[in-house]
Image (cartoon, rainbow over all chains, first blue to last red; front, top):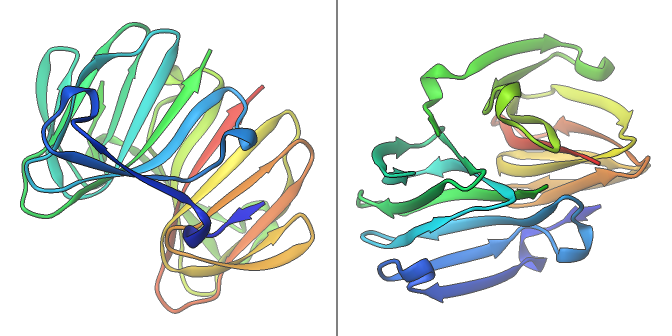
Length: 114
Length: 114
């Protein structure tokens, strides 16, 4: 099945997970197409925006940085990320992510459930 | 866990799945970090290159087109894809993908197992 960009659902969330500003999400897939997964999204954080620190239990979330630069709070440790980097958070670990650059920070987020 | 691009394993496969030319893969994650998944890769097909038509049983593969243009053989039907599009192939369906543009065709490939 091919899903074209123009047919994907989009949503802007304010203060996502108590983060700063807003996060713009494009849902790459509908709920019905997923198995052992609960989210496939492209997330855009504009300058200064963030997704707050939160925990993942019984699932793993993967971020793949498509463009831009930011700082990830990786279970308590702050690490710079940029285009091409990956972030893995699961088994009760926590994460948050903030755009610390001037260009939009764009990443793919995939949550795989157990 | 953050994995920086420079620490990712890269590989070039010739005639992947009997396709034309070569496919360059960057493995976004190591095998040990995955649960209910067997591949997370960024795949680059240069002009004219392709991954041949093949089937996915007991798993679903997702392509997210990061840049470029191509044609997907989506279980027997040829469909044009471009930046932002998604392709879902599972439950015994087949797919193949070819770069039909002049720029590299780059996509994220995720295989989720059942």
